[in-house]
View 1 (spheres, rainbow, N blue to C red):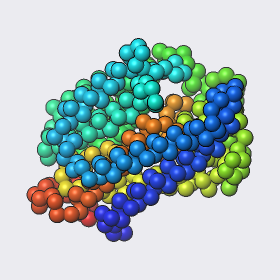
View 2 (spheres, helix red, strand yellow):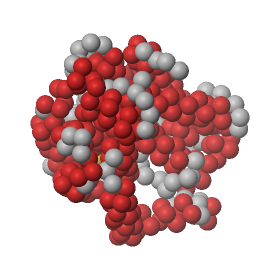
View 3 (tube, rainbow, N blue to C red):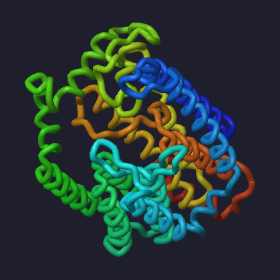
View 4 (tube, rainbow, N blue to C red):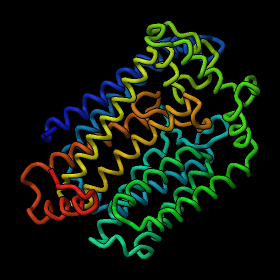
Length: 393
């Protein structure tokens, strides 16, 4: 199937907007009773919906602006981007600036809304990985000399994120990084050693915190802990069970009525499963798969290696975070406190993911028109062909 730059960007835009509109519909369905309840918030029933519309408008503005900003801008300013991301992460530890919820300090309080720096940091880290691989030239198999500096920087960021704590985001960042460096051609033994070390570290982190151990136990046998650690898992499964093939219809779900916590953020996928059924779940999954597929097609014909690896990183992180959230909702992974891109309520996530779509669009446009030099385009395409074993588009 041959897709031009306009077709690729149209598909990306349609998928992102379709998911966002569906998410806003589900957010209103999930929160109109909760928001209007005097026992919970006492807000306007459409409070969360209206705020999400505002975040959508801001996100679209960012996407449109970044789609016109040459992606080489990030390569030339990667130090500033990385430094800003790290400083923002540190700000969540400043009293009076940070906002704490459910025992986690992941947000900066901006009065009108809160900002989650780790959402920005994950994209900054993947841009840094793309820059580092590009800077290493056509010899990624040099191994340790190129790999260890990337690991050092990523480890510093991940350590700060884990301190918040945000275990789920740390896993998303590491998994996306591994996808990019694997495709870049780094030795598989080096990657396997890193993955093994990461798995060992994750196991130690889980054992060090009783609540994480409880989550694992509840994941393995949620029914036995249906009123304690397994409560969210059981209520989510009930939502999917109620949905059946076609769902109960928008607004017809029951689990949103104070049964399932964090229904508009971490568990919005459960609302979709209950009210739109298996059909709705399948369509959401297909939309994410399409976005990742188009993103990798854009990477394949990027004009330069930096654009190629940046597109891979953006596509990977969207796909991996979406997959992990959906797997949590279906009790295929332990709960991690992670939002579903484009669908969950939250300004940081929606704005930054729409901005990321704008970056992908720019890479697509610059990879297909005559702005890049012949040498730039040849270098990027040759690299991809060498790594994929296929002929470039």
